[in-house]
Image (cartoon, rainbow, N blue to C red; front, top):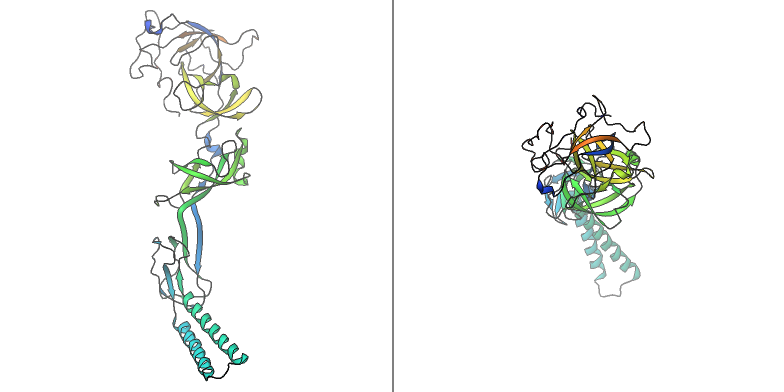
Length: 390
């Protein structure tokens, strides 16, 4: 990309420079700029969702009719709370028969005579049958094994079900989990992690780190070393729900570019990002905070930030450039920023520069600066040093 359409004809521009700067600033510089080839972050978007930390299916222990469903769909239940009731009539009869058999054996043995081994065995067998009948009866009342939420109820009262039919699904949503991509350099098992659930920041804990699955293979193109991790997100108040989308904070959400490492500079004081680059945007120097993802080679790095396809990256300059500085390249009626120069002895193209002042777009983006006599100024389309990334 060149910016021939953006840069005006060769001339020297001067935005009013007052005594606030303390000294006269240079009005020309040798600047090397190159076009940016951007990759949109959608190329590395992966889908991850929240799911319950544990989930169980409550199934029918035997054939029978569903007689009650006291816990409706979506309700929260406590441990051991009743979820469903199957028909108990036949099981209750079998229990009565087993108890009667126990009483019969006990009556035969209650003669005052020494109890034989055979008699003791008969009593023990009768008692075991009674206990088994009681267990079968109790099993027809289906209870929650832990506190949770009823997330599925595929049957209705009065329905006849076969043994093994799913009666209800119970999910523990006090914590939720997800399988997300993470930067190996920042994530450790048992460590804390920041994620975004439906673009709302949430704390998380890394449970385990695994190799990238096939569905995440596009992330191997990034310079950052990505892996996949199971994470847990606490949900003590129940504000989160299964199925909500999760985004790892380490995934890029702004355009990516591979640039010379010398173009990356420390960020300005107070900036959230640790690095920045300077670009020529609408003929003005603009500082863009960036994240360095990693090295591509000994001379180039991959970055992500609020870059635009019309930006020209400033690789080097013979003088320090302040954000808001107006750049006009010399060299003919249609000058432009080229990636290389045909003359190896030159570092870049000569350019006229005008430092920003109290009336510059960087300082007061709401109004145009007052031009000096016999000079030409152009107001930027967006405020220098920031603005919308797209």
